[in-house]
Length: 71
Image (cartoon, rainbow, N blue to C red; front, top):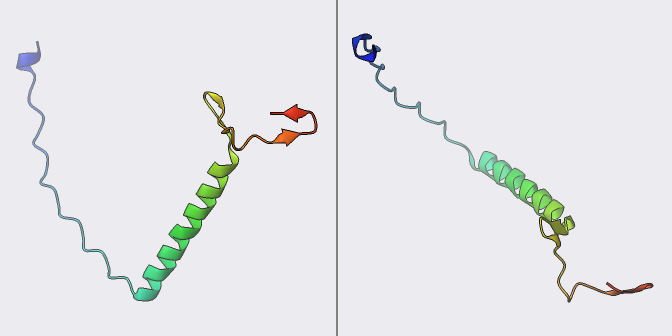
């Protein structure tokens, strides 16, 4: 009988988040440099993957002649 069970206690009030320390310009530049490096690595890996769920995702312009004929 669900209506007879006791109610759970109320949740405590939420505490505000502590203030983040201010970063110097050097630290901000280092963080920006790391983020840019990660983006370059991620973009480089994506460009090497030419297949998807529908098969090869190569445009006609990208298809080139090979020794065995046209792709």
